[in-house]
Image 1 (cartoon, rainbow, N blue to C red):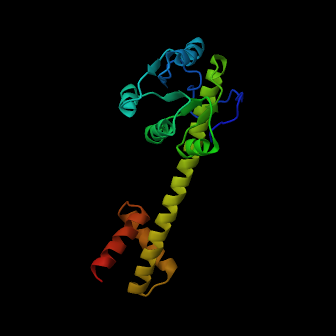
Image 2: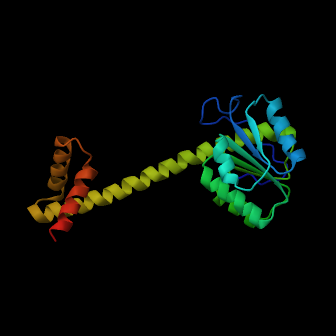
Image 3: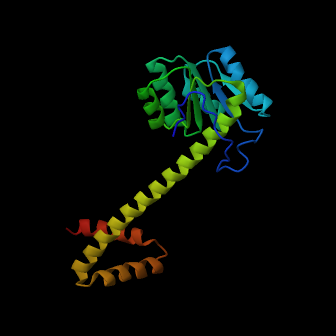
Amino acid sequence: MAETRNGFDPPNQGTSSPGAQRDSTLKIAIVDENPMRAAILEDGLREAGFTQVERISETRNLLARIYAIDPEVILIDLENPSRDMLEQMFQVSREVKRPVAMFVDQSDSASIQAAVDAGVSAYIVNGLKKERVTNILDLCISRFYAFSRLQGELDRANDALKERKIIDRAKGVLMKAKKITEDEAYALMRKTAMNENKKIVEIARSLLTAAELFK
């Protein structure tokens, strides 16, 4: 989720990546074409002890520049961005799969929703202050890893459902071919999987492939 309230002072939260929150070696990229505004972020980070802070002052070929730096966190300051500029930054967030905090001076509901959809971890409206930078950084990292955990759980659940459907189809093939019950079909696949040191879903896929060949 992205933070959007003006003046929000996020709590000092921990992250799922041990030591990442206050690790002075954390590599941070600041994307900002305005040197004065970038200095606010840089000063806040360096005063908090972060030593690996690099500024990207030009947005042309931005993805290539970010990949070259390979930062662990990205802070983007856009001041008053155009729609095209916002979309470019949202594209960066979708591509890099890193914690991204975005600072803007003003926004609207459509831009906020687009930020959430793009995976921006913290979307800060009118909140560029040196003393808030590290708390926002903590929030950004914490939310990124929390979302990553949820996404991982969802992906595993979807994979398990797909495998279950494959196994069920394979059981149907065996039941029809050998005139056996569902439990017997599953037991046969399980025994074969153990003998061949494979997963049941692999045996199921092989059965379905063979069934297609002999249609």
